[in-house]
Picture 1 (cartoon, rainbow, N blue to C red):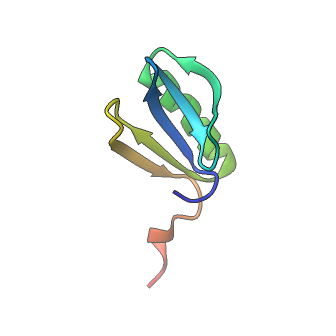
Picture 2 (cartoon, rainbow, N blue to C red):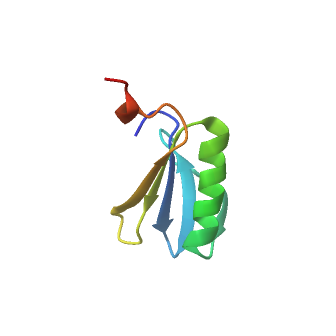
Picture 3 (cartoon, rainbow, N blue to C red):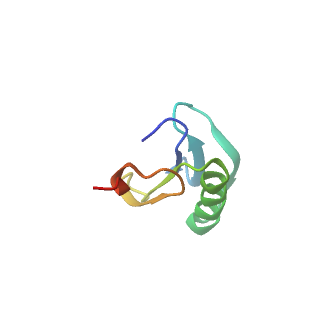
Length: 75
C-alpha cells in the first residue's frame, strides 16, 4: 500500500478502518462490513488514495484507487 492508503479490516469482533502507517483505527468500530467500507471509501476519496478492503479472514477482497493509480501509466 502507498503511504496513507486506507484499509478496511475485521478485528476483535468489529469492522474498522485505519490509515497505512498507523496502528490505530479511526472512527468508531462498525457492526457491518458495509458501514466500514462506506466510511473507508469516503476517507480514501477525500485523500485521493487507495482503499484496500479485507475479508474477515484477513485476505484482500478488493482494492479501489481514488488517486494516481500506478497501473494506469500511459504507454
